[in-house]
Amino acid sequence: MTVHISETEIKAYADDGVVLLKNLLSKDEVADLKSGIDKNISNPSSRSKVASDVKDPGWFLEDFCTWQENSAYQRIIFESQLSEVAAKLMCSEKVRLYHDHMLVKKSGTRQRTPWHQDQPYYNIEGRQNISFWIPVDPVPLEWTLEFAAGSHLGNWFLPRTFLKKEAKWFPEGSLMEPPDIEANPDKYRVLSWALEPGDALAFHMLTLHTGAGTEALRRVFSVRMLGDDIRHAPRAWETSPEFPGLSVELSAGVPMKHKLFPLIWPANLA
Image 1 (cartoon, one colour):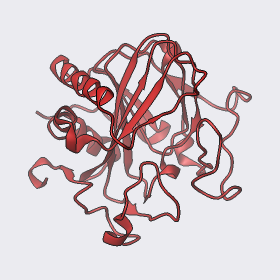
Image 2: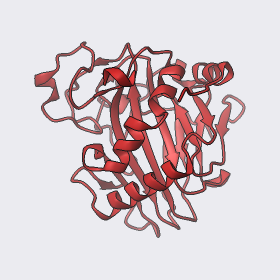
Image 3: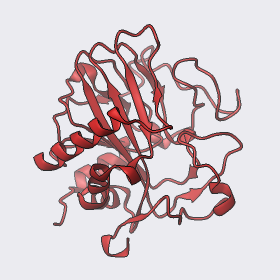
Image 4: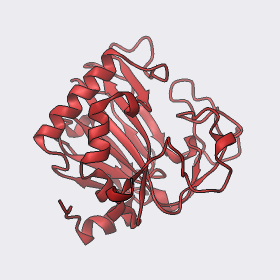
């Protein structure tokens, strides 16, 4: 089925670095995805981590790169409209899977995710990229993500660990610190939306964003995809997520043509 993505949505993605897509998944797809997330929660991989402080009354669990073991994730990635939507928003002829990311905040979680960009944590270079953030629970405005519109068009900022604020990726001082957006509300246009199950936020990996705590269970599936201009950028440090041994199999500066990153659009080339 052909996906209808408007020119307004394509322009919003290009200009703001984020766009809300209502009802991107069907009710059946949401139910399937919810079952996959619950399976992931009950059987997390070795790459999972608790991203909330031990003193937090809630719990923030993340897991990465489990699509090969999770049939529900596979169906969403390979059989839903996501890859075609990604191609249209990125203005890319082809789309590769980069990785999946589960994010679950239990009721009462106080941990707020600080303002950050995603791409500096990764082993890729290039502009044609996209992240989908898809909740299977309602997300009121006060618990949603916030984005600094247009921030994907500017600098890369230093990535830090969320709890201890350590510069474990790019060396300390090698990149600028993220701006204090709350302290300068007139300088930044902050975008946020309430979401229902089946809605999705699509955003560029360089768009500055932050996430609130939650007073209700918030289960989210995020999937990152790559377009035509993305190239491998091996790092001298462990990326998040890590792809052990990839630099031996994939040289720096080449397209991400590897079994870990299958071609998912056009579907007949996968």
